[in-house]
Image (cartoon, rainbow, N blue to C red; front, side):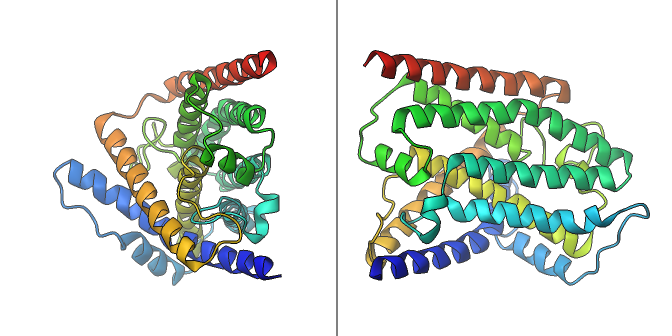
Length: 320
């Protein structure tokens, strides 16, 4: 009973933490990129200020918009928020840990992507349809790569449950494997594509020949735009937290632990998240966006790496 109450309290704290940190993570990446480029940069709380300002405004709908445009931001935000709740941050063994399955998380990410693409098509704007078509074309490569990475982790850990995979890595039972390096690189490439980051897309541009994500929300305004921005921030936090939970789960408080271990896990999680944010900012500052027609090649490389990782792990475990 005490463990169940502790897991529920940890889940509530985890939900509040994710909702609070997601916009600040976006602000941190923007500030780091500006500093690396020699500029002052916006304050860390600027995304929160923008969200509060947009939430006070009534959305203006396109003349041909259907109820899909009204429902899409809520569906996408709900699916992404549920996926975020399934990915542990400072502690494991939370109330929803039994549902924390990588296949389920991949499905929730796909639901959010589908809602965003439908909103782009529904607006009746040529840019929205163009961005949605590109997004779905990229997903044709990103989703198989993600599923192959999940297969690799399942072969290694014997389960697709995120807590089980994190426990295997935390206990040091995995060791150094080339296949895991391939899987990690493939997941990073998929994360960049899913979050519309450089080199796949540039979240700071509105050039009609290059934009993908921004094209789909071009008609959004008011609180609908705030929901889309919050969903994008949560998705970035989701992917970074997923990479940490799978490959760097060290310092996470185990199931049934108390507040002291939670504080330690929180400090370590925030530190690791800050390092990933710095790595992302440095990576985006060092390279430029690739041409849209080169993105399938980039994601095809991720798919090949994920396939090699699954094949090598299958052969090694089969011969063991």
